[in-house]
Image 1 (cartoon, one colour):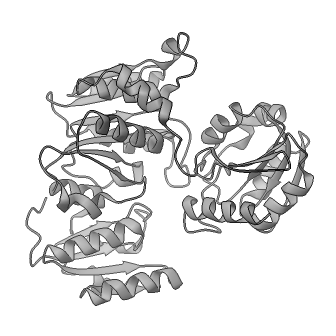
Image 2 (tube, rainbow, N blue to C red):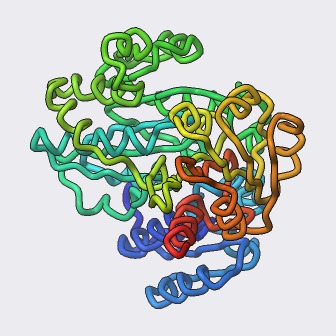
Length: 421
């Protein structure tokens, strides 16, 4: 992996949040930076103007071979598929392709704790950051959680800590990435629009510990046999958290809490300090976020539920008659797996987005189902159908990219709509 980027020609594929951050970082390090994105919209054009002012070369609306050819390195944004023409060209030309977290890690002097899993990553990353802060550590809470790693890496010192949320997409293109602590929270069906099958998805997740040594730590969920079995594949010290057994004595805690406590223990932080953080934690934005109560009707923003399992978590916590707003871009999910829970918890299913017909078919005959052409229409129709004591829950089970830039925009729009009701 390159350590000195001055004078290097680097192509960045994908102008999302991490793509923009790594482009600025590389420019500051003295690289010649070329950014290419297949999309073209108002948000990208605004971003492009800022990058151009910094002397970064940029193309939108498609990829050209000239932006890839003769480069020393290609950096891929997480949302970019390995089947992207730009990455296929790079592979053909034998140009190294890395993710933003790989490049940022190569420059990072701090202790990195990397957290992955199908669900719960943002909550655990946030909680762990807060726990470390209460123990007087200087902490950077970064990754898919909001700020990219590349945005802050040059501000870090050797005694700092990074609580880093990482996705399977980011792990696909690592080479030397080696966190001090790796955490795999859980593993359930997801992203089968990107991966051929579950073993391929697991292979991407497992990359989080592939470079770790006996001086490092791997934290695994003992309750899932498929994760428990990874212990024998790791060179790092393996630490399990066993939430199923522990929650019998502490029902107010969930697996996310036990994962945080397992990591905290590595660094000598007490359970009591963790419990204090848990008590004061208000939750993360877009994850079971209480928006407003109108005429006794509660509105909850769970836009971060981009897979079926995440919506299961949300519905299991619902104790009111629920109108569920769901739909978006399908990820080759099997919605029928939660038919019993939907029938038990949901009084009306309001569907939006590309996946609405597939979801309607999965739950046909189980409950009342309506459709809407937009999130605004879905929210307004749900409000009209709801009664005092009901809950309107946005928990889509799908990706957002058919209608929104990301789940965060979807959640913000939902909150804006609710606050105008």
